Length: 86
Image 1: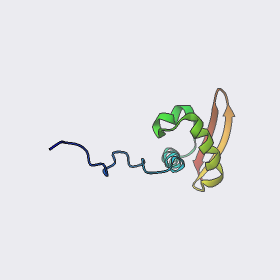
Image 2: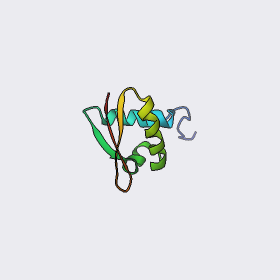
Image 3: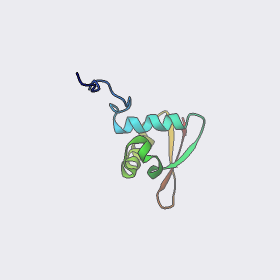
Image 4: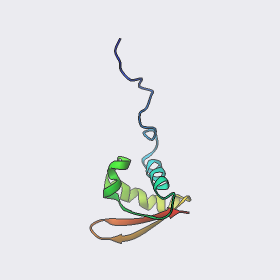
């Protein structure tokens, strides 16, 4: 008998979430204690998204995420985003 993992057992609990929901949960977790500033390229590996995907999703989250305040803060080599719990 082989020792293969059960395909229904998911090692990554966020793998079944949409990209937007995965990013939102990550940001909510990080901003739990107050505001946070970040560039998409620095969190891309953490959320398994490209910086371009993060930028597009941040624009969506700015309008849809009632739990977060999302602000496009500045641009120096890449967009810096400011978030805080709403």
